[in-house]
Amino acid sequence: MLTLEQTQKTAEKLRSMGTYGHFINGEWVNGHSGKTIDLYDPTTRKVLGSIQAGDPSDVARAVDAAHAAFPAWSASSALERQRLLLALGEVMRKRQLDYAVMDVLNNGKPIREAMGHTGHAADIFDYYAGAAHQLKGEVLDQKDATVIVHREAIGVVAQIIPWNSQMTMAALKLAPALAAGCTVVLKPAETVCLAVLEFIKDAAGIIPPGVINVVTGYGADVGEALVTNPKVRKVSFTGSRDTGAKIIQYASVNIIPQTMELGGKSANIICEDADLEAAAESVVLSTVANKGEICFAGTRTFVHKNIREAFLDTLARQLANVRQGDPLDPATQIGPQSSSIQFDRVKAYIELGRKEGAKVAIGGEAAKVPGFEDGLFIQPTIFTDVDHDMRIAQEEIFGPVTTILEWEDEAELLARVNDNIFGLGGGVWTQNLARAHRISRGMETGIVWINRYYNIRSGQPLGGYKQSGFGRDNCLDTVLDYTLQKSVVINLAEGPLGLFGAAAAPGAGAHH
Image (cartoon, rainbow, N blue to C red):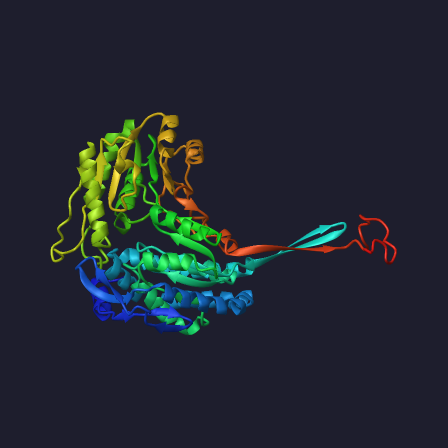
């Protein structure tokens, strides 16, 4: 059982982390510009460490290293790639507590969640280790030809990950690309990335030079240079819709494929026959998990009119039991927002909701946590009397804020559920199997959880519809997206086709 004493002791060891370099061609190097970026603890607002402020010169160096390493790595056996992925998983498990505490200090998520995310990240490496053996070609037998379809690694890939779940996102990107035989340039978020950098530091000795490269810095300085580099053959991005739109434009320069996992405004549908305790628990979880900084969060809760009051009573009772405080304490269930920017954004949306005429039923203020007066804490907030067209019901807030909307007619419900630019996640709570199938099939979203939200399993495709993006993470298809198919057609019929008649006599048709 993890204790506060253990986490505090680990935090003291890690709290002053120094300056990390870029990881290029198996070495830690300083950035070209010499500039650095400070990273902060959102619980105390104190500096934890710093990273390089990368620029196009650093990007070019990393891409060149990945390009040089690609021929050998893409020719490696599935067994070699499997061994590396399993070893990366073991590296992550060996220092799971350290990485989790670093995530807590840099992001503010509770240690119980950080431990779970880091453990899950290790499992992702294990899952994709097996996938390395599933990259098989194909043979098409025909009477006069044999077609061999080869599946080959696509090349150097750019991977850009967000700040909200750094360890999970790093694993979801790195593992399938490595399994496919690609080499990688990873760009983590410039506000939260210390645990990822420490993991790469620990794994450096087992990573062949150039196979994984990491460049840190601001998106404006690193992102465009990375995605538009002509040696980069694919980009995989997880982050906001607005940034995703820019990445797609950058990718068009060299016509490279993209995987985009963008924002969400997911609907969590509570039917009249739902288990109220379990459904309310899911809404609380979706509101407070990772402080609401999760793209899959079910921030639009549609409650059947006939159970609205009973549901709200149950929700209020459960929310009152949520423990907000020091994220290093294993008892804490919600910590501070990850940055001042995110804290201000969430507060602005709460004020916007009030101005739009919605009612703050629970929360709605910055939270005061004794001993952490400078912490970026916000009370879990529930809005009622919400109109579907309000901005708080349409836009991604990315904080501990949930809107409650009523419904009665199923057809009208689905029309409202689908009337949103996003389509990432969703939930349905009912004891009626036919209704569960009917509603889930009618939802324009990439994931629907029935009677348990955030029920994510290995091999389950993760990705969205509409402006939540395209492509999928967390499944075998992810590996296939890092490959290209090559068809080799072997002709079995001998001789010419005879299209142009007998050969002309020698000298015929000569010009005089």
